[in-house]
Amino acid sequence: MSFAREASRAVRSTVVLWVLTAIIYPFAMLAIGQVVFPFQANGSIIVNAQGQPLGSALIGQPFTSDRYFNSRPSTTSYSTADPKKDEAKVLQTGVSGASNLAPSNPALIDRIQGKADPDPEKAIEGDIPRLQKAGVKPTADLVYTSGSSLDRHITPEGARAQIARVATARGLQPNQLEELINKNIDGRFLGIFGEPGVNVLKLNLALDVLKPA
Image (tube, rainbow, N blue to C red; front, top):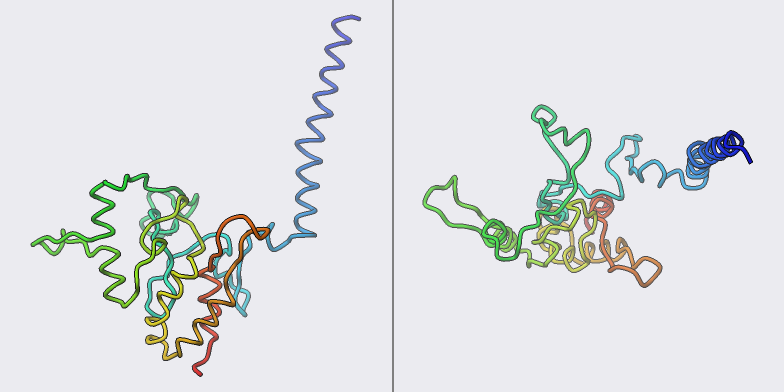
């Protein structure tokens, strides 16, 4: 068998495989995704009644107001940035990742426990004192960041720890918020993988339509 015939067969095989894997397969998956799973395929974007996007159900975002259930801390501020001061192009590319600080790292200890200093500009309040001041019992997920820093969930315990603060800020009954949390708990994937969690964005959207008892 001649070299030219073998080379021609190899080229044809390469072209056929390229068409199958680089064109037909991706477009087939795109079509199936748009027809069968359009919500997930387009980023799981949650919109309001006016059709305006509020955020993705898959990516966390910061909530810090007393009127809302707060998200867990993030080393990347959930990839948010000031559009006028976005030198790192965070808004264009997004940022994800942990701080990789060891438990003994002073920067991590100061962020969690706080740091006193005669100079107010150098003093650090700390997450635990801040939560305690707000009447929230610190839980691990309200103090430590996730591996991606984009975690959309907090634990049911972390949500329940904030009930008193949110109820006071909104004039709601604690039992109303307890029921709301229970309705918004995502169970384990397939019943066995992961731990139950509460999607903070979905919980706060449901909170906005809750009326005082």
